[in-house]
Length: 198
View 1 (tube, rainbow, N blue to C red):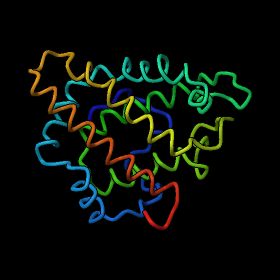
View 2: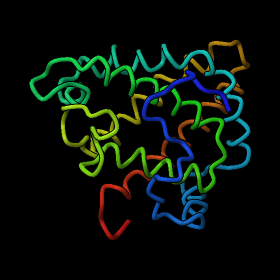
View 3: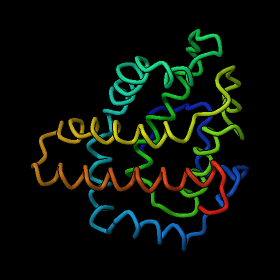
C-alpha cells in the first residue's frame, strides 16, 4: 500500500486497539448499493489512486490553505481556541488527510477499512477530537460541516484526476467513483455522531 510518508503521527490503520465499527459488513454492502458503488467504480478508484499518488500534498494544501483557511467557521477546527495557529497539529493532520485520499482509492473496503472509517469519524466528534495530537482546539467538528464540505472536495478533485492525461471518459469514471466513495464514507461517519436511527 502506498504511503504518503514513512512516518505519519497518529495514523493507525489496522491498529488492533482501535474501536471496532458498530457497522456490520452486511450494512456496508447495503450502503454500497445505496450510493451506487459498483465493481466498475472500484476499478476506477484504483486508477484514481494511481493518478492521485504524488498529488496528495497539493490537493490537501488546496483544501486546507486555499479554501478552509478562508472560512473562519471551518478554519477554527485546526486552530487553538484563541484562533492562533497550531502548526504541529496541522502538519500531522495534513499527512493523515493525504493518506485518506489514497486509502479511499486503494484500500479494500473490508472490516479493517470499516473500523478505520469509524476512527476517522470519532476524531471529528467530541469522543476523540484532539486526543490523537493533544491539540487544544475545538471539541468537535459539526456533522453539517463534514457533510457540506463533501461538495467542495468532489468539485475540486476533478482537475487532479485529469492531470495525467487520461481520456475524458476515464476522468469521468474516476470522478464518479470518487464521489460515490466519499458519499459512502460520510454516511458511515454519521454513525459515530450518534442517533439510534442510523
